[in-house]
Length: 334
Image (cartoon, rainbow, N blue to C red; front, side, top):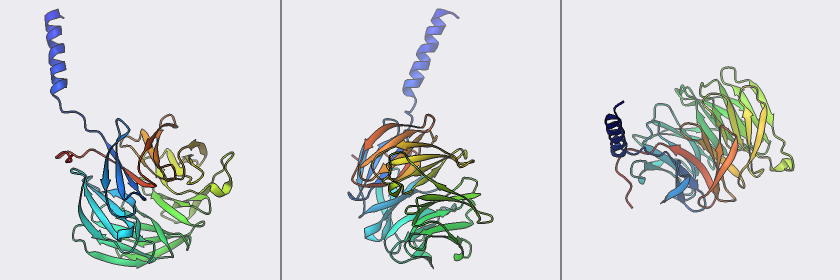
């Protein structure tokens, strides 16, 4: 190639690169239960870039299906707050029933299923009309909540009744119950909707259930060298979309279990911060974030190498975490 043309090509390429809009970084939102705040983490720098004041005792958080809104359980305010991801401002509140803790959004992006711990009910709210569509009686101390990918089933866990409650989303009626170990805390559907993984905190187990038959396929137990069995208390569960891994947060055991999601073999235990609670994956699933309540930080796990690569200090008692794409819109006000 002619040297002059080559130099011109390099110059034009560099100019185009400089003029191209910068790539937007994914963000992680962490609910800090004791500070009444959300910490915002830039997923490129892995640093906290903003702290947002929210309602009292924020716990469960989730993103709308169109990735424009973040819903926040402000438990002590008995409400669900709505945060606009473009402006990072609270723009609305939704009725929630008393003491909302965890919730799940139907694939229709409208029906929000909310677990009301103090009232032994699940409240269903239309997020567009703010209408309470139903309140369904379940067991004692409802906690975990999930909706199947096809939208047919909502499952609630009750800590004292030790059950998974199957709610038919069309009739909005309780259809069945599955007994699991003591104090079930979290429930998660596989991406294909064929299985459910449910953690039992006091039982120290995770139960895998076949959705079609509702038969229990496997009950996983965990043993960590040097950790007393009483401290092994499974809470959060996160599944990779390719069906390869299940990650289980083991509470005061301060470890995350890595499980082969097909064979149910426990592959490793990763040491994280104190009282690991909930988790979320980055958009490309290369990183896993864990909330560590006692140490007030977030551990970052490299999913490829299965190693903890960083700890990020956030607020007091981080509870939930959601990774979102950076919204394309007006930048948040300073």
